[in-house]
Image (cartoon, rainbow, N blue to C red; front, side, top):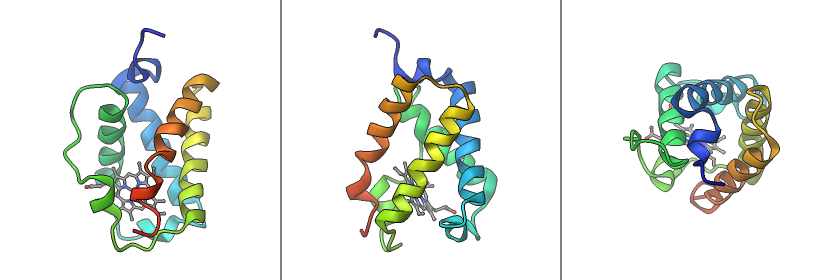
Amino acid sequence: MSKSLFERLGGIEGITSISNDVVDNHLANKSIATRFANSDLSKIKNAAATFFITGTGGPNVYTGKDMLAAHKGMNISAAEFMSVLDDALSALGKNNIGQREQEEVLFVLYSMRSQIVLV
Ligand code: HEM
């Protein structure tokens, strides 16, 4: 296990594709789509990709807010958080990411729950 998660997800190219699919899944997901009704699509895709690249051991390219600051006051429920995890797993599957890597991403995402749900 010498390669970073960033490398095993396909580097910048692979993670950009996964992140675009995650955001597209959110917009198609009835339980959370309205959250992004006023969002600038290219801006949130870029935020998702750069956050993911930096958070998995890639270059330090994320310049957005920390997770608490980004979600504070939104009243995000546990069910909505689960929807985001579902969308992420589905995007990983679509991009042919192996189970081991899917488990690692799921764990990293889940670990942010307390900074996002009902904050
Ligand atoms: C582990 C799970 C999550 C991660 C890693 C995550 C990540 C992010 C990131 C990186 C940003 C951009 C912050 C910035 O630009 O400064 C953001 C913004 C946002 N997130 Fe999340 N998020 C998660 C869960 C959720 C959930 C569950 C919801 C609600 C369904 C949500 C709704 C939003 C909204 C509405 C924005 C603002 C979008 C905009 O700027 O137009 N997030 N999130």
